Amino acid sequence: MSFWELTRRGRPQLQSLLVGLGATAVTMAALGKAAPALIPTGIKATATLLLPLSLGMAWVATAVGSPFWRVAVLVGALLQIPLSAHLSRLFEKPFAPWALGISLLLAWGAPEYLRYRSGRLKPGDELDPAFYDPSPLLNPAVPSHGSVQGSVQGGVESLSPGAGASQPEPQKQAVTHADRVSCSVLFCELANHNELADYLPPEQAANFINRLLTAFEETTGAHGGRTDRSDGEAFRTVFCTTYGVEEHAEAAMTSALAIRERAAGVSLECERLFGLNLDVRMGVSSGEVLLAEFGSENSKRAGIAGETAEWARRLAGANVLYGSRILIGSRTGLIGGHSVERRPIDLLQRHLPPHPPEEVFEVLALHNTLDAWEKERLRHYRDGVSKFRARKWDAARQSLLAARPPDRSDDAIDLLLLRIDEQKTLSPLVEKESWGDTPA
Image 1: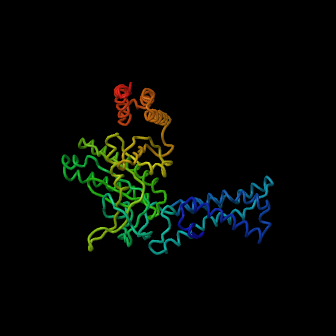
Image 2: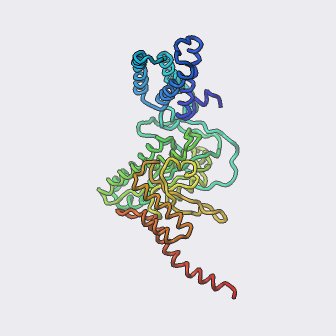
Image 3: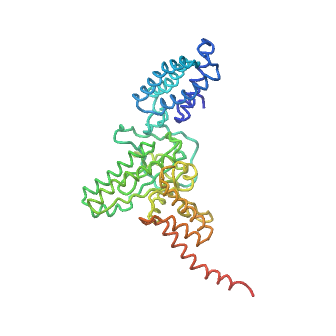
């Protein structure tokens, strides 16, 4: 990939790094040849001053979506140059105001030019949405990487971009090739949808469900997700590298946490009015899915299929057993677990034996957002799970009891304590049976 492609389509971190380094290099090269007197402190000292300021300005110009604030930061930085020059004269310190000004203008102007150019590109050539706006891309072209082999499991639903209420209606997605793509699938299940439909007034039931679906689409759309299923029972979104979401696992888990908060507010209102909460459970799975057009000849629509999507659905349903809200698979935790606080829940049989069970985790919060008490509870919990798997029953019980919250129940901890009791009860029987099998 060329330097231009990296700068035009890369993530904000890469873009700001390239733009900042470029602005500093161009400034030093130009002023070093054309006007050496403007660099009185020497190349090394001046570059040390320009580099952090250029990187900072490039980051603001790259990541800030509001034009007003981008201009305001640039003007504020430029207005400080005369003051810095005056102070340098008072203290008799060398300073290069022109070099700093040119470097800031270059670091600010390059992203602005890219924004201007992005508006003139054909569909499918847009900038990375994280460059200027977290909303998803419109009409991305789906590349083909070869034929699809093997059987497909899981549901097939229509694929339409997830978008917020303030976003325009996107054009219909065109998929010309069947393709396997790497992605993360977020499956949101309304576990008690039957109760809502049966016991709430029809208009109110439809209203609460539609409010949930709106919150789902707005939240996932803001993180680059694309709606794959949306009905009264469940909602499914795909976060995919094909659609410009490189850190798709991180985007899926961040969306799930945001949905949990928004759903809690709607659920509280429903419970206050009708005595029923909205039991939203979510599962996130990362891997490959089949992206293709499905349907009859006259009604083909883009959709996904595959075991990765099915595993996300199964994880969403498993939340009911553990009293959790968000469960993720091991691959999701491997590639995106650094962005969240999580705890191990169980080993679940994803594939039939002889495949080993897969470890699943509960997502608790964003990284570094837990308070000291919650961190201490999480430490005790992880220690208890580790000792439980090592069959150290008494030590595991002690750690898990220390992790149990005093003001509410924790189904995951209660389930582990129940398993410890079962194992301690069965251990003498197993040992006795093994003694009976020992030859005299």
